[in-house]
Length: 248
Image (cartoon, rainbow, N blue to C red; front, side, top):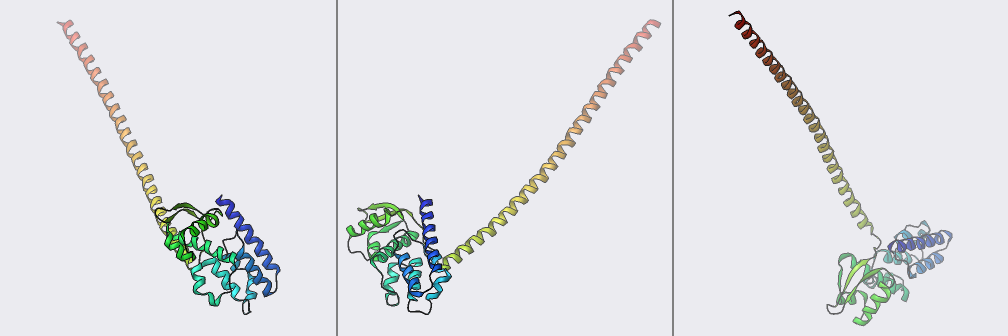
């Protein structure tokens, strides 16, 4: 299901990107931003922010559409309420979308979301309205899975779709991956050195084993020679004694 959702997101982004490339006027592009941020199945917007066509909004009376798009990429309902004076008024579909995105943002930091916190962040006045929103707009849409705990008054998140990474988050992730890569390279070098040392010790052990086996063979040969010499000596001694007895 997650793969299907990701595929759907990619398809929608591709559709809006193609539409933006075909538009030339700021009003048309602003209308496209409105359509994208209202779409019930689209939850990723950072790629749209990078579209060259949207640069035509800069310096026009529709420039706030870019700020709105940036809000949907990285912000929450609380951010909108704090900056509503510099942003265009949102339609009900956009408000609902921003609430959904706000739930995803909260789920990034903790998997136990208290009802009181959710009601404050989503501007919801009662538990019934909150639970209806979580069920109908979040769980049914597939962006989250979880359990409503009325006794503990919290939402236990089992799965939440990821949001767009801010440039700062992306840089932090790159730094973290770079550190991990450096640590991995160092560990790999140590492992290679251990393998090399083990190979060397194996050769040394083989050499010592060969030397030991050669010495054992030499010892066997020496013992065999001594045994043969001892038999020859005993035989010769017996014949001498027999000859002396005959002469007597």
